[in-house]
Image (cartoon, rainbow, N blue to C red; front, side, top):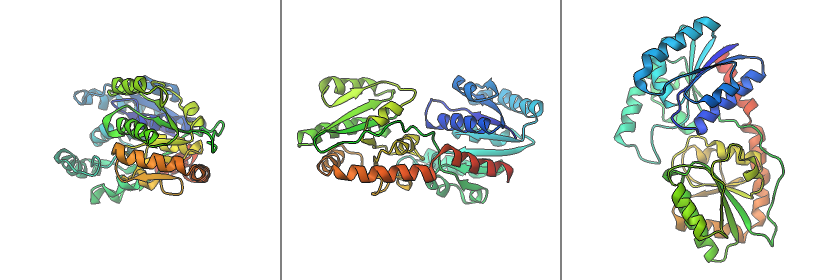
Length: 345
């Protein structure tokens, strides 16, 4: 099968990595992959790569490029990924099957600002031109306009196995926490760090390793400098397998997610996850493979971290469940096979 994948992500994050994982898996199975992307990293996973400007004003040239590639390579399916590409895709008018992957619900956190209501209303019209919509989480599917649900399905995110060696806490060791995500406000990195400080002050024994970059980097570095015994900061890490495999628990106190790849990567390493009880996340994390917080305040995080450190025997049980969840639900192979079923349906 010949597949053209269009990804116009604005930053290098989970949505762009989704495309890379999918392209690599499809190509390994013998499918011919053409990538149209604003990120040059995608050329590593495609047979043919074309750069695309992410600005909406360049739509005319984008449409021309995509249509030319469809004809030149005899493309069978055009698969667009992410919000930018989804809203432009129906206007491409390609003569082949058009599939789109939607990662996030229209709401942000638990609210529905006016602009997201408008986006949801607009999508009811635009998405009508799509042949199929892949939602990476049930929350994303549930939030689709009713007219779009008939042509949509839920295919959970899948990630490569990052397990190399399990590192588990024992009764006389501090609990090793990790955070692998962008350093942005809604991900909750600063409340997490303040929560760790408070938990340790209350008698918990733990250490937090941080991997990522973003606008809050200076704030994170300042806290690391103030508490070097509690934190280690690694900056952006291209492959965080080493971070996961030296930790006991992965933390993601985010308030807005689809189905986070870092949670699934942590599961592949047998790490239980500490996260906030929000749509998308609570489809993956539960009290058998992690801990769900009512909010991401530093006070709530501190209480839970202290409780975990006082009941360290629970970590091993939740670790086994996290690994089993990954193996049965969140591998790249499983995601790829379900996506191929959509292509051929």
